[in-house]
Amino acid sequence: MDRLVGAGLPFEERAGERFFDANDLYNLGMYSGRSTTQPELAFRMLFRFAGRPVEDLLRPKTWDVRVRLECVECAGRAPWHFEEPDVVRFGGRVEDVTRPEPGEGSARFAALVTTTGVRTPIVSPVLRKLVREYLEAGYRWQMIPVPMQSDVALVHGLGATSCIAASLFLAERFREAGYRAQAKRGWFCGVLGGALDLPHACVEVEDDDGALRTVDIAKAQLAARLPDDTEAFRELCLGSVYNKVIPSTASGNAPFGRHECGSPHPAQIHADIRAVRR
Image 1 (tube, rainbow, N blue to C red):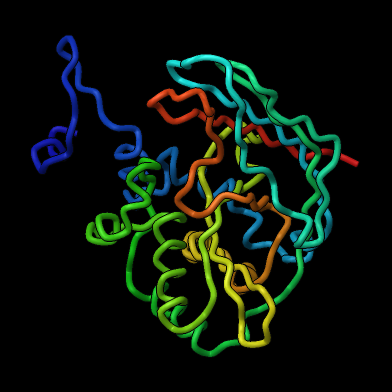
Image 2 (image 1 turned 30 degrees about the vertical axis):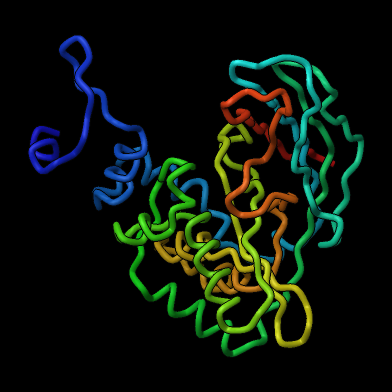
């Protein structure tokens, strides 16, 4: 750590102790090449599904979705707005919904959400070329603070990327090539039992045949780092949908929710998503 600090790793000193940013420490472990750090071990465990037959990712799967919305320095009673799961258009279902009621301080959303998967690979050679160019550009996926992920130029200028930054960039490239495309946010499910609240984003693009395709570029990047054969899963990420992702109605760089009370601080959104055994 002394050598890293000497090379410029930032930290804060508090009462004689050094405190580092959790994202920096995660990225250091993830790319240390030691294979024994917590991020490396957790990554291989959480993505072990990517080396298995993809048929399991195409069947219906139900999730118990519970979201807590918190208003920081709430200015009083007001309506809530929450970007709900958007799975019906992909063959899924949303049942037993509890929506946020007008109030102050906090609110909750709950639902049983059923996702499913379907193979719909990209048809357009232009879209495939743009995806391939991005995957070959050498950007390294990293844990990045959520507000920073929307600054695509800054993130890519550092040689890094994330699901949000990559999706915003690709959506723009697709539009420049004449395609209707937008980055959309959602949740990647089944991570540490649902207790890990990570932002996720994909690109939705209208293909040459008029059908909507979903490009999950970040998951394709991450799966390529695994020692297992993940080619089938990576191909699934390039146009298809699979049951471990719950898309929402939020755009790629928009928050999942807000409180209309007038507080200057963004609402804090905490999702707990767990698989339902049926």
